[in-house]
Length: 255
Image (cartoon, rainbow, N blue to C red; front, side):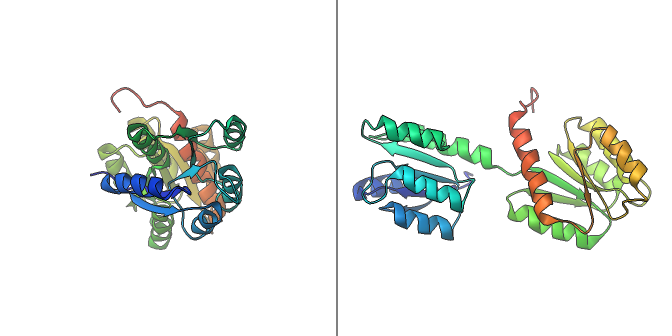
């Protein structure tokens, strides 16, 4: 089953909006439309979109200026510019500002659908395991990470985490250093033997007591350490860094 993308179409040509919207809705996507840049800015302020298709040449405020204002509201917005005109100066400016690409009218629907799938792949969440014997920590992290589009599984012991790692390849594992029986370092090293590409973030509320284990985990290529109570902004920043890192690493054959 295709996972729908949230799409915004911005074009002052009403027939273009209707046609494109109809085609994309038939493909199962969640589509919104507006006819000018000012309305687009308000829609983006109220709702995040996976991809925005933006006509370059519009009255009052053109597509590039609209894009610049949208970036201030949602810096990670993915915008595909559309045009039927020879407006190379605007096209070049849009690309310099970070537009995802350009589609020329009349639209090639197949190319449009390919662009949507590419964006969806880039925005896919990661498989994340959270290993901690504190139910409050695991439930909080699960809610936060799932709200960001990641798929999260929970383990309360190192042994349980190891079993889960044998059944599925996880992108990232958040591991508490102080676990019953197997500690966080032992758990990480055991999982690393199964999945050498896993990225681990160690967690602890005992900075001094766990300092030696933390140093050992860092030497074994653990990505980072988070200290409890968590700074959620730092946590989400680390998750975003890891997701970007994962995108740039080519998949192993057969994975």
